[in-house]
Image (cartoon, rainbow, N blue to C red; front, top):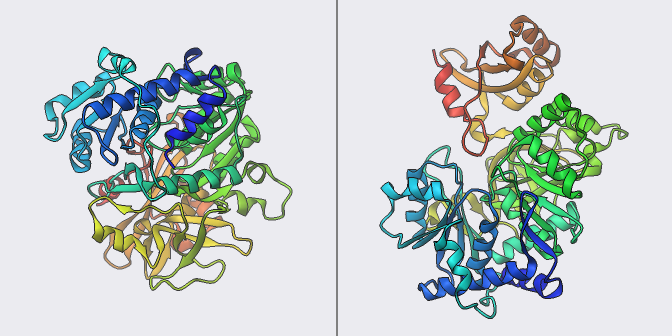
Length: 506
């Protein structure tokens, strides 16, 4: 199934329904949205783009992003979304690796790309300029190209924190499974709803457009082009019934703004958080300050947004005897996925034991682009080995315990940084924390905690030590606390622990 068929269906049913907004300004209704996508598809075909060809999008959040995305699919091509915050050399490498001959870009990204323009690239079409708006006048392609469930439609590149990023091949069938999981775990949407793109549309925020196109909802791109807490609260109040995707760091900033301004989050329906660890203290406070609006999704590029879900009702529940443990989890397996925790040999571990999380189901990727070796290492006997460590409880709730590569082994004992981080974040003076291992001659590794204090204030390190001693085993206690003004993060807001390890080495 071609996703452009969903846009066409909504456009036929409700052509005058508002679709695309730049801030509060309407940019297109659904009829116009579909016509523009059909014309963009026609222009792509005229330029020699065929079914299955990769077309890149290197664009900041704006309404043209969705027009380009659906134009690509309408032509039957493969969308290659690239984070607009990447360095131009990183973006150029992705374009070259994908073999994209055409890229839709923001003006600033196009300018930065030009000096390192890859040899495969024939054309750069710039949103907001004539090269893009002129496509609206191209002859419309009457119908979206016919695609099967096995056809690739999305080539997503991983963040590449441990080397070159890998291209994750996502099929139409994978996307349909992701949508089914969302509808069962989060809910459906209608024309009365809206979705707000505050996180990069190249990732979770953009991949959640489907459910809103199918439901005929409104799509709002902030004027700022990204995350701005006051703008988000203003737009939510203006539009009402607004859903959005947010990284945990964004949720933290929303809570801080709400507390400082007295805002309550009126107009927000769902805040779906994913993409990194959400600590218990942070989500507890988020519900207290902004209300029962939060849903947690656990997924990966290799199984997009489709591994587990912690529904809004469970996030807000304080009546269950184990609500604390459930809130600290990432929920239960989604309807479309089967989740297990295994040892290094692939044997299923008993309830409560920590091992690697594996997942099986129709949302799991086809494989890695031009990388059969990495595919065979990651997908074994039909199971996707996520690289994440976790444990299942007796009710099927999955709790994460870091990436396997982040686990610290000290004196032969496994130490999971997140467990230590959760304790330290219970101190009111700690804004952020990241725990890493440092080489030790006798023990192999020792635990080091990197702390960012609240508001640049000082933190009593002895109190942090006492907090750890009172809550976790002594061998897990940090042997040193390093106070920083900020934690190093990549363009997706994830802490770069490789840099921290280098920083703390003596």
